[in-house]
Length: 230
Image (cartoon, rainbow, N blue to C red; front, top):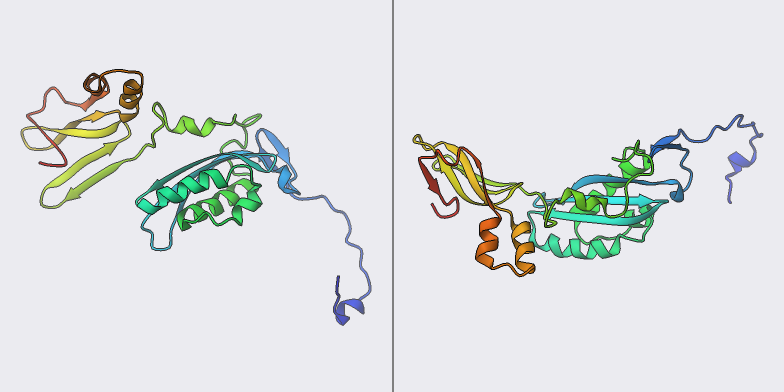
């Protein structure tokens, strides 16, 4: 340790009482976090790249400072999907400090990691008051059956109005319109359920039919349109 001459010539003054850092809530406990291993929790966060052409939703499950589970969901950039593949391998097993200083290739994923780090070390996780936290694999519950991200994709133009392309329920195949050409419902295919059925040996056409559903005033519509081609 090197001290400047100004500090060397100072007389010592006692620091007084030391009470440690303010405790933060972690998995149902109040913890005075002093080291990386003192940090635990599951949380989600969103990151974006500098040109804001894509975004990443990152979910981490941290136990005793180690990332035990990572869910990486990306949107809007094709290259980011490959970066996410690498990140899913790179992140797990690292401490959150290591992960913060790891190049996750995509700026959106790096930014998401930064935002999650802040949540985690400040005790703002989703499991702050959940005793014992959540088991490894809990992030997959966000995806539902078939393990697919819940993505909403809609397009609209002044000239032709809205088009539903993807909803939480799945891939939109048709939109239902009333006599005034207003949207009153839609048809969707739950791709996760369909692919699971096909994997079990169900005929593809039968699996498609079983995974197809409707929402809204479907049966009372005046007409139906394909949102991608009509």
